[in-house]
Length: 299
Ligand SMILES: Cc1cc2nc3c(=O)[nH]c(=O)nc-3n(C[C@H](O)[C@H](O)[C@H](O)COP(=O)(O)OP(=O)(O)OC[C@H]3O[C@@H](n4cnc5c(N)ncnc54)[C@H](O)[C@@H]3O)c2cc1C
Image (cartoon, rainbow, N blue to C red; front, side, top):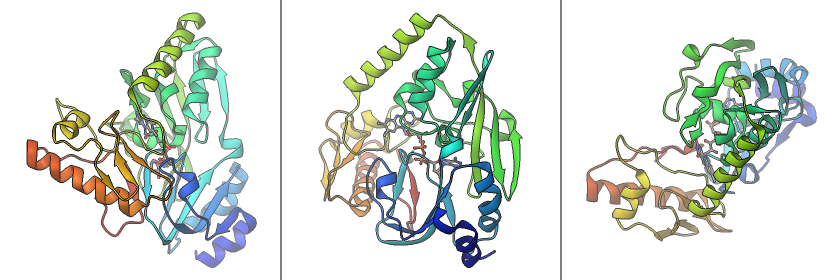
């Protein structure tokens, strides 16, 4: 199907020329050809078929907390899940969470319902869909440890994937271009609500103490085996390095903050400079954890 068909089917759910910067935590990025907003399965059934053979590349934007989107006019379509996809249902020790639900909200609601095992997610500012795609994790756990099935839309068909098919790895999974995560089933355990609340509090405090605020997207690089990207970046003397409005955090060297007025080009230039500095001082070539959209060549 074509772009014309997408516009015809989508109506005002297809927002042309929308800036994507407000949908990312770096607050940078240009205008998509369109942002498609899906608020229900009915929306997906109606509009989804027009995405299958669309001549323009498309991708899902969750909370944009791991995304670097290129500057300028972008010939791509962003899809955003909202409405009915922001849901949580608990049945015994299982919970079904929609892709649009914010991880910190899910972590708090599950804890309040007496379930334990998802507290780690209180400090990760993504959506369930983005966390499934990335296999997000922290504080000794990750999605792979909690998720028993993933609901995926691919080429117009919806299926529940087993963990084997989903294949969560270190900030990777089998979710790829053309896949839309709609939700996940979590298998947790009954726990002590007071202990769980205390764990949430500890994690939030730890994050405040160790991570910077401002416009950032968490760890820029993955940790290489047996080492930490932050340690290597600090050892290479990059803390405080700046390109335009992008600055390597003084608080945590693997975070880059973008100041108001900063651009994706500033950010990418800085990422390249940091990677080169680390390579020349330690011999380690860092691999990015942030995902890049709309670049001719991602760093
Ligand atoms: C302050 C801060 C702290 C962070 N700490 C952590 C941490 O401790 N651990 C960690 O793992 N990450 C961390 N992150 C990074 C980020 O929050 C996670 O990677 C998160 O899982 C991204 O979710 P998102 O919804 O923002 O996804 P986005 O950034 O919007 O997208 C990330 C990728 O997932 C894809 N995607 C998003 N939604 C869907 C969907 N529904 N279907 C298919 N694909 C989808 C996107 O296309 C993209 O490829 C942190 C970020 C910040 C800003």
